[in-house]
Amino acid sequence: MKHPSYDESCGVCRAIASIEPLFENDLWFVARMQKGIGIPGWVMVCSQRHTPGIAHLDDVEAKNFGPAMRHFARTLEDVTGALRIYTAALGESFPHLHAHLVPRYAKMPNDVKAWGVFDLHRATEAGEVKVDENEVAEVARRYSEALAKYPPPR
Image 1 (cartoon, rainbow, N blue to C red):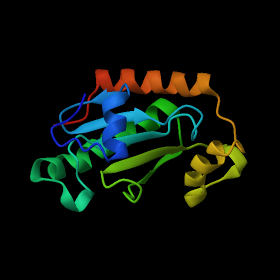
Image 2 (image 1 turned 180 degrees about the vertical axis):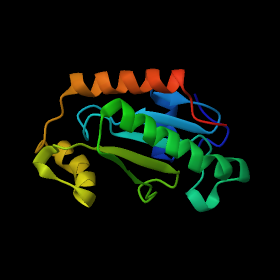
Image 3 (image 1 turned 120 degrees about the vertical axis):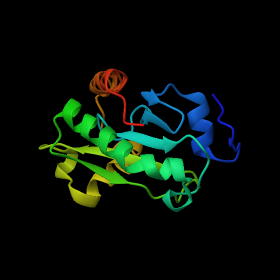
């Protein structure tokens, strides 16, 4: 579905319009990473409206951002059993707010931690680390079900 501020030149806008969400409401779109990338449970939370970053959220989005992100992260932590959820919102590749939520498990590929966790995106893209797609799909299914049963606050 194309949101009202859709911009064809934006990769995040194109992705939101073309993939099945794990969760979606009028403010946020949550999706798993593309196949073969990252680790099980790595998701992206995107603003529905095209906005270049947190500083440019409107008042409704800004008021909901903290509670919604806390809910998305806490639910992901519960579903995955992760020690914590790392969060990064850079907005460098595309000027559209998108935050990565990455589970930090007790055992990580290549024993990465801290900023190294985000390098797993590149490592899986390069084929240096393999992702178990069955596990990714199962975690995504459980996360989607949890968010459908207990959506973020409004």
